[in-house]
Image (tube, rainbow, N blue to C red; front, side):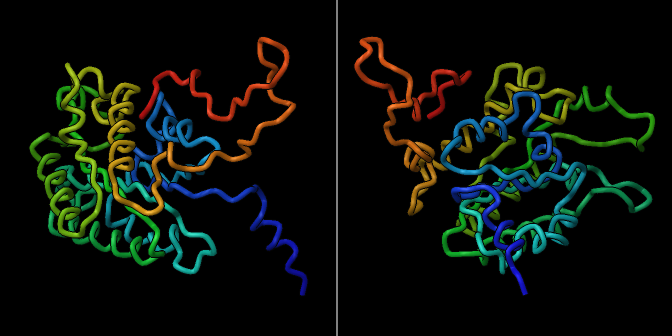
Amino acid sequence: MCLCGEKIREKMVGPSRPQIVLFGSSIVQMSFGHGGWGAILSEVYARKADIILRGYYGWNSTRALEVVDQVFPKDAEVQPSLVVVYFGGNDSMAPHPSGLGPHVPLPQYVDNMKNIALHLQSLSDSTRIIFLSCPPVDEAKVRQNQSPYLSQVIRTNELCKTYSDACVELCQELGLQVVDLFSTLQKADDWETVCFTDGIHLSAQGSKLVAAEILRVVKEAEWTPSLHWKSMPTEFSEDSPYDLVSADGKNTVNSSEWTYFWEEQWD
């Protein structure tokens, strides 16, 4: 039986790079738009790692737990080097009287997130994990933007903080890295105005704060090997006579590490 097709699929795009997977709800799915934090990470890790998006608008931790073994199969030939996980915003919504909807009671949310973490930890000894906790919201804008096609969405910062604190506490218990988004976004002046597009989802400014915190956590983590972008090899970084020619016309200039074109210089 010919397995050529399978071999081709395995090596469809090469060389192989470390994989950084973003797994979460709409804040993950939308992280490549509006100057999003996923797009920032893709730029920072260009030629170093592949940023893989697994974002699902409207999902809660219960739904994520149902499919985590399909998104991250234990028998995959290559396991991710880093998984950034975000669920909690939808879980923290007030329950609907019908019993339908994304609300997840706090104890179940904590249990779901723990089981997601345990599954990810089982993938390989070198798979690292960062959880993002529930961010705040602009409550007034959330009320203002109620859709005529949906039942009332009740999202309050009191609930957001409760779920954020629970996520942070869980990560401390499990020894996981965590970004406290509830605190991070509120460091910005006029955070309710500048951090969101609609009161819930992140603006470019909000995403910059998230990206900066993720990069800080990665830099400070005592992981071997380090996953900080400056510590990772750059693909095809050797000097070449086909590089741009220097001003004196005698040599070429290696551009593989240039970052001058970034909107912001990240550490």
